Length: 125
Image (cartoon, rainbow, N blue to C red; front, side, top):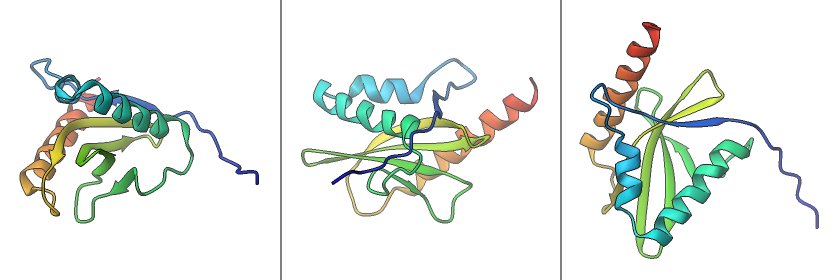
């Protein structure tokens, strides 16, 4: 059986705050190495696949264009929030370990604040 997978070339960027912090990098650095490897593998899918399976990538309903990158490793559910810029760039805002069925509202609000900040600073360039 042959599977045709369309390859694209998206770019994944890590958002940096005004004071130079990089929440996604801090999150990745906090993970055990095997979990970080799995997260990195999923992030590569974002760059390479035209259609990303919803088990790994999904739009959050009721948000300002916030998406979640979903990674399951062992008994842990890792989430990294992100948004699109110009259809070919995905900006990762921050990550966390999901501990309940519902995504904490403050995590979504944090991603929306980072998105607005990114877009506002981008306009100034």
